[in-house]
Length: 343
Image (cartoon, rainbow, N blue to C red; front, top):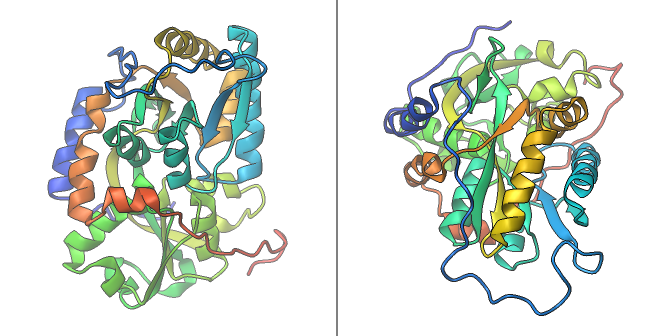
């Protein structure tokens, strides 16, 4: 395993440490936070009943990784929920994080699996309430409610630290990705005293964590950000990816991603879905589907306040959440070479 360089995040880490402390570091959250309807929720529809054949519950998944795999896992989760709740479901994978938020705000998406910053943005716009948080096993095998970000470079590039990326081409994941954009941006600004656009010769949005790592592996960029370790999902197709790429920086902890419901979503249905998902996450089929979905090892109730520090981190990074929520990132095109041939 390559040695990693863990640099301090300053104010951001201090803010997010509140999250880690509140969660007990690696313990699953115990605070039950039932979703509540926003004060300005839309009037009740007089159309078909929500969850009926004519008006299925729309569940969306952010396109953070391979869309085909996310769709397959999402449909497996929806099938289980249909059996447990007797409700009809419709699975969607929007084109971007922002499109998912816009769908919730427009009432076109009822339940969404949102990245932390995406949830905070949607909640700030009065469009979403947290239902559950993801739980993942850390590197020691213990369940954790937080995760970390990484910056990766080509192993043969000679780049050993962040300074070596100055003037190079860099890939972030999505404007509203927490580990793939927000935390790397904060660290870059604090370590270099420069804006990322000035520090790098060019910055792009890969459109997914796996695509971000592939962009480095295939030599399209000199460095890229993602969650730790997005390369795991690529090893089956590209078995040498961890040899060809090296992690040079980590950042965190970051509160895990969420399952959220749109504002105005019926409380009784939200409670029913929450229980069904918690039960499903404990089954063998559920564990398999969640692992394939976003490398999730479990689900737990959580407190929306644990995500508040991300707003302060966004200010440090200079992210205009309102502006980013209106924009749709254009993914970088990544080639798919034969896994038997190193690029």
